[in-house]
Length: 65
Image 1 (cartoon, helix red, strand yellow):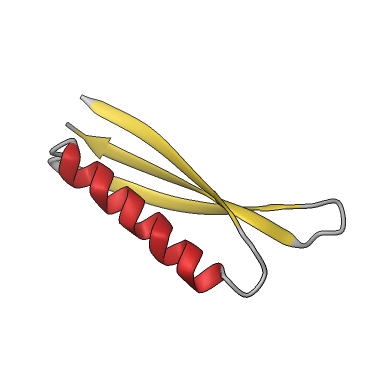
Image 2 (cartoon, helix red, strand yellow):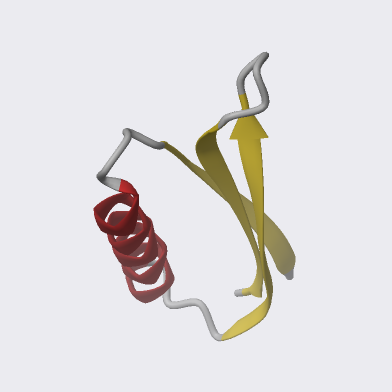
């Protein structure tokens, strides 16, 4: 069965590299814990505030159980 899982993270100034590393770890933990057989796609989209500054990221993983 094909499923979709969404992850999100807010960015703090000067901490983006660590936040991306943490998001990667969260996704990898989900894949291992749920015994995902096949990852079909991974897609990232940023979120912005009213001034256009990037304030977060949404990562969508499509996978097969």
